[in-house]
Image (tube, rainbow, N blue to C red; front, side, top):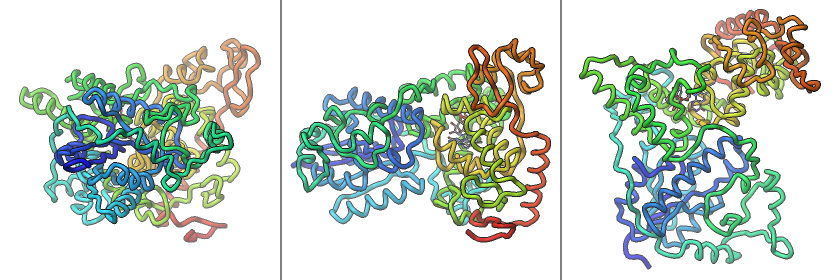
Length: 568
Ligand code: FAD
């Protein structure tokens, strides 16, 4: 047995070796044996699955960390075990004689419940569990919430006041990890032994033992549980998309995960001092996509391949230098510091509200608006149910007939990332700016498709957008890139292609007709007519919003059923 602590480090939201307070804490324990692991969580793998672009980004982040460990230690890697954490972690602790479990704490509702379950199971067997707060956000959510009187932070003003009241500070990054102790035993051999023990795991060997029962379901993406702790090659390697039953063709996002990429991208931003210091969000454009107008670091911040504090202090140091030199520095909240403060505002709001923030029952900050909620037939201010369902599907598939909306929705599907103001645009269009469809439906689509999906930021921004001003603005290049059907259209008609004369439509190789599901004919493509008269819809939305503000109701568990308001 090892002399000294045996530490299991559980990576989740911190796929990096730089500025990781959780990892630093684990190493301060001076482990005699050290096991950095990633566990596949059935909640994410089978339930809240998301699109292939996000999985590819995640797998690249895992690969980056794996390479990082192999660089600093001959005997280490990221040990990936294929089983849910609540069941596998207690087994691993027993197997390796673990004395301490350490991880970066995570305030998301699901994560909090999961971590409580794991903590309870381990404390019962005497393993010390430490979740280190403050690696994922600028401020610790519970401290912000305390400063805000236990309430969710619903504005930047509330966040800053709470920070001030509690005297919270953003800590400087901790040192990068450059060495780690070795594992205390042959990890792979021990896991193989564990698999052989029928009391420990539940491998489901088919007759002949060659394949497992779930193999077919897994390749179809229909599996519901893991069958082996080890990967298809019998090791603890980082999985491939194939193992996750995902088609690489669905994962062609140009954005790449991994710590090295993250630091390179951050450097690119910070090296351009003028850009960093004068960045003002409203002045950046969704239509600039080569290069993109904002930092595109959100997915790295989500998976923790980039430390939020490295970002924050990198920017602050430039601001400080420029202030001393009396050079321009953009103001909050439009500047880059303001952007990451918004992120913290949503995280703290979600922390206070728990699962309700996601649009579940009991979300008391959410104004009641009788949106149409496709597929469950609830509510709907003066909206034809079938029409709204159709509009929702056409919005989701990028065939509304409004080229700017369609270009953005196709960019979202193809690349998993769109500019913030593009997100504004499509969110407003779906909700109060056109379709009057419930924001929760839009939130679910973003949840599936975004590579940077962050439950707090996504739900928070959807709530905000569905109740605030409608943003509209566009440029031609974005449309031509993401709607190649319209590539040859004259600029006069690029936003209203249905107004182009038929002869011109034919000349430019695309007829404006149907609902976007028709197949073209030879070289002649099709693109849909607008799915509704925008001015008519605009007025209907204004009327609906006025009504919603007049009735002054909160809590999104109330819906209008057959003309009457009910709690559902
Ligand atoms: P930059 O402008 O370069 O900003 C730097 C960082 O600040 C971002 O990486 C991000 O971490 C943070 N940030 C910036 N704006 C916001 C904001 N409004 N809210 C929260 N954080 C912000 N962001 C996500 O990270 N995940 C989501 O799931 C998400 N869903 C959204 C849904 C809608 C409807 C809207 C309108 C916005 C959403 N955002 C989300 C916020 C924002 O659009 C993205 O963070 C941003 O566009 C990411 O690009 P960037 O890294 O270039 O941002």
